[in-house]
Each structure stands twice: as C-alpha cells, then as structure tokens.
Image 1 (cartoon, rainbow, N blue to C red):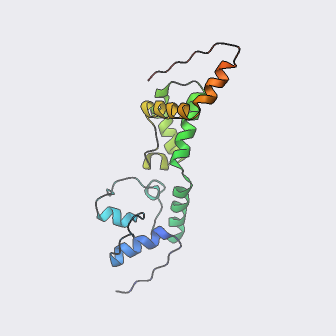
Image 2 (cartoon, rainbow, N blue to C red):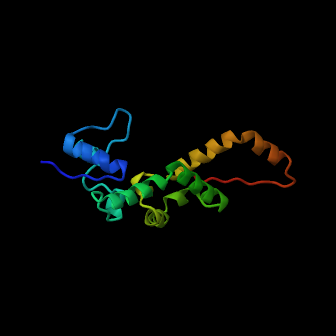
Image 3 (tube, rainbow, N blue to C red):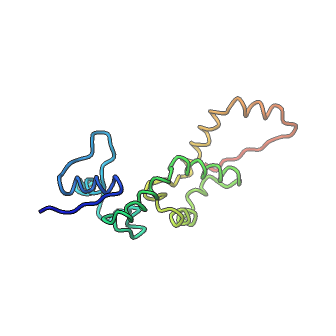
Amino acid sequence: TIASFTSSGLQNAANHLWREHKTPAPEGEKKSTAQLKSEGALKSNQLTIASVSKLDVNKPTEQNIANNITSRFDKQYFQRMLVELIVSSNQSLSFAENPILQETFDYLNPSVSIQHANLTARAVRYKIIQEYGRHRQKVIEVLRNSPGAFHFSFDG
C-alpha cells in the first residue's frame, strides 16, 4: 500500500524508513526509536521524552517538540552543574542521590532519567577529583597565598 508521509524532523523520517522499508540507520549513526524497539534495545515500556510528555511522534509538530526537548538537554553540562551545586553549597556527596532532588530534576526535564544523567555519590567524588587534577597547580598556588587555614571533608 502507498502511504502518505510528511516529515519535519529526522527522527520521524528515520522511523518511517525503518517501519516501511526496513532501512537501518547508517553505521555509527543514531538508530531510530522504531529500529531500537524492534531490535529489543528499547523496551516498549521504556520511558522516552514523547511518552513522558504524552506526545504522538507520528504527528510532525509533536515529533518536533520531542526532538527540541531532547536536543536541548546536555548530560555532561547537567552533571557539571550538579557537582557545582553540591560543592558550592557544601552538601554531602550523597546529596546527589536524594530521591526528592532526583524527582525534581525529572519533573523539570524527563531527559535526566531517560539519559541516566543523575550521579551517585561515588561519581560526584570522582568528578571532583578529576577537576582537582586539572586545576591542581592553581589550587596549590591559591592555598599557599592564603592567610588563613582550610578544612576539607568528604563523606565518600
């Protein structure tokens, strides 16, 4: 059967190519949701931006909304901001694992849980140590020139 197909987003086109023609994504490129589902990589009950936002991805305007939400979320930037929040407010590293905080993030942007962007206390600790390693010389210089004493504490 010949079907009419309009697309204003690449994901919608990729889904069409897979569903109607079984054309997979090019090697090394992101697979469509339809392809991932049929290959079993994406479970039918797995959360997506479209399902959380109750969007119909078969409608081009709603697919555009889902694409826009997804493309605006930067996992690395989110994680860096979370670490900065914890450090600047003197929270324990386990604050990142607070269920209410994580629910708040999910409420603000479902991409946080969909992309597994929440951090564990151990991951926060690792990222802090990485940053320290990158800026070690500057930290040493600032501490040497500081007139007072410092106290550091870690809970993990």
